[in-house]
Every structure is written in C-alpha cells, then in structure tokens.
Amino acid sequence: MKRIPKAVLCLVSALEYIEIGTQIPSAVQIALPKGMQTPKIDTPRIQVFRISDKSFTEGVMYVDVSGTDIAVSNLAKTVADCFKYRNRIGLDIAVEALQEVIKQSKASPSDIMQYAKVNRVESVIRPYLVALLSAHKRFDQ
Image (cartoon, rainbow, N blue to C red):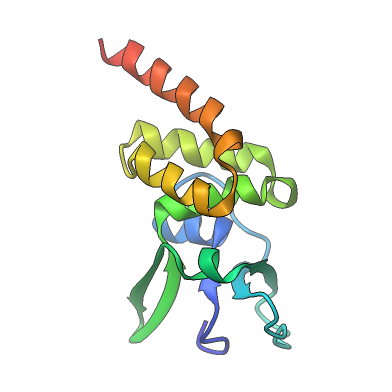
C-alpha cells in the first residue's frame, strides 16, 4: 500500500484485514480509479479492480498500519463490493461475508444497501439480506 498510495485495500483483502470470513486472498486486492495505470509490482502479487469515481471514494476508511495510513474499504462497502465482483471472487465469499456481518451486527442492513445502491447491486443483495434477516429474527425469538 506504501508503493501505491492511491490504492484502496478491498474485497477479500479488506475482509481479511477486518477479520470477517474464512478466505485468504491469493493476492493483495486493491481498488484503483478507472483510468489509472496499473503499477508494476513483482511482490506481493496484486489483483487490481477498476472502480468508478463515486464507488472509489465512498466508504473508505484510513487506518494506521505500522506508522503508515492506508485506505481500506469499510465493512458495509466491502460487502457490497463482494456482490458487485461476485463473478471474479465467488458468490460464496460474498454470501459468507454478508452472513457474518448480519450475524455479528457489525454493519447495518441500511448501510450495506446504501453501498449496494452506489454499486448498482441492490437487486442482487436484497434477496440474500431479506432471507438472512428473516432467519436471524426467527432465531432471536
């Protein structure tokens, strides 16, 4: 992240950083704005996701890692991003992240849907979210 200061840690790499899910990415997954050239880095392996300007700037938090501020997608945004890129990372990863976030109440359904709207995946996430919330309510009663 020091070598690519404009990058945002995203998707499975962000989930791993936030400690959600069981997946370990095979490469550091970063978001870059559309039009930015992909940097040449041999190690670590990176996987670049091109994201529109609005989606790129929404839901980014800055965290201090060993004295360096790095940009990381927040949890609700990461879940929405996982559904947006489900064909590249796997629907199972997106569903697992959503399940854990709802079960642990780490992000609100409205926050997740806010970012789903930005990513234009509301209709994709909604059925999973409704099913999880219904199941969660049944078990709480």
